[in-house]
Length: 304
Image 1 (tube, rainbow, N blue to C red):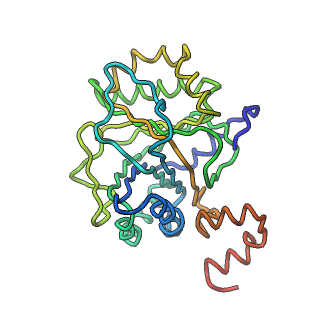
Image 2: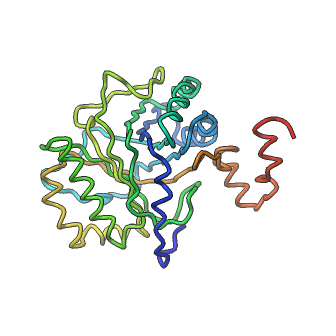
């Protein structure tokens, strides 16, 4: 949970991740949501966490039915057609060499995706993403917080890719300067290529329609939904509307129900080691013995 009286900006801590991917995920419709969320958090999550080379791994679960006012409707900017998601994943690396190590070991991970995902699309960010502001002290969240989080996906409008990227960067900088914004992280991935599907997980869809090939993604956090609504009505935001119309063709906003961190700065979190829900139980009961080095070694190696 954040403290709105604290003004410290922790955004610099994210710069240690030089390369990353942002993956959108859609659950299989036959899998109940609670089963999907539990499996993703406590089965798939710890498996991914142990793949060598990984520097950062965060699951962001999305809520399909939280709020009808996540993002203002703007004339001339259309909603993406038939765009429903159940989550987003950020996987990051300290170097290209680390990413290659991870990619070489990934078939064991991709084989698991078919158990709960109907579709996954990994957008590549070879230059990394950028956190413009982060006033949330906890670097390894593991659960739903009382703050208001959302992801907003933007599709390119009638402009070139460079112009779209320049606008989105300036747009993010403008919004991040407002004290109402607790966190803003910008993802500007390369254009997605359906001919080179990523990740190459068997029996999982990896294609997108043309309007979702060139996108930008903004991660926001506000103190409350009311803070968010007032921010959208502010002069700072409304002054950006003409620019949005000129550069953005499509938009979709998604409410974040929980953020789960499994690897940070190349180190397993308790969630990465044990699973997200067991880590929450350890935290809730103050089970300090469960996070000591001897227990960690036993779980990782099978030896004391």
